[in-house]
Image (cartoon, rainbow, N blue to C red; front, side):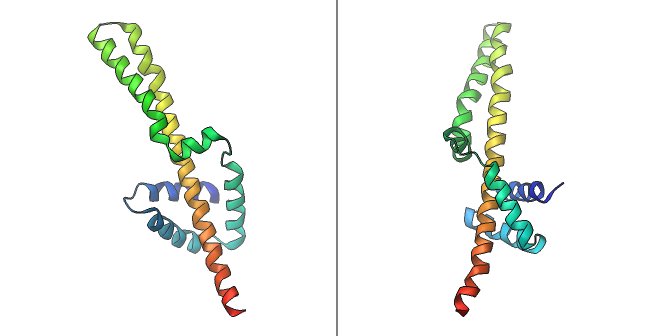
Length: 137
């Protein structure tokens, strides 16, 4: 597993914690600062920025993954409800189609949010590294 995947997994782990975004970035900064060297940080940051989507849909998924997946969860639930109550096997196609779509949308958004968290943490580390150099001038 490369440095990029490892940092994204660490960020995903931080996302599971109930805390503010600033606290998540602070904890991630500590972990990145200890385990990743400066040259690797810049490479990871460049790779992550290149991977992040620039289109409207990608940004929407990153910021509002649950709202985007909600209609698919609703259709899946209605399909189950109608399939069971009306005894119609055809109604079970809704959940069979919509559950994987909703799950993958949320998974993709979670991953994008973790990548954004890593980028922000690396940018804060770089800002802290530049700050003492500016104070000496």
